Length: 78
Image (tube, rainbow, N blue to C red):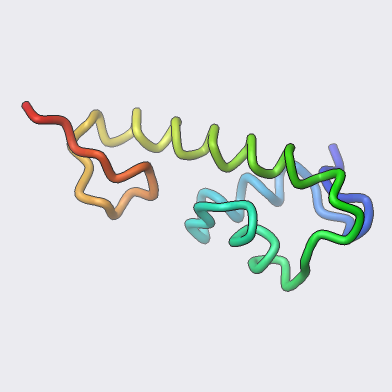
């Protein structure tokens, strides 16, 4: 599904930017694509995808994050 019609990038491409490039914010996603939001309708969706990507990353390190996995970087105290 297209996320941004102005620049023509898809949901799959945004997920790849988040997972492979480590884009941790909406602005980092746009920077990955060498663009800036034009009409702005895609920004909330990109933010949600980044937030979901961080949540998935936190589960992947099982709370023992050293900051290198791209999650929120919050290590558990246990």
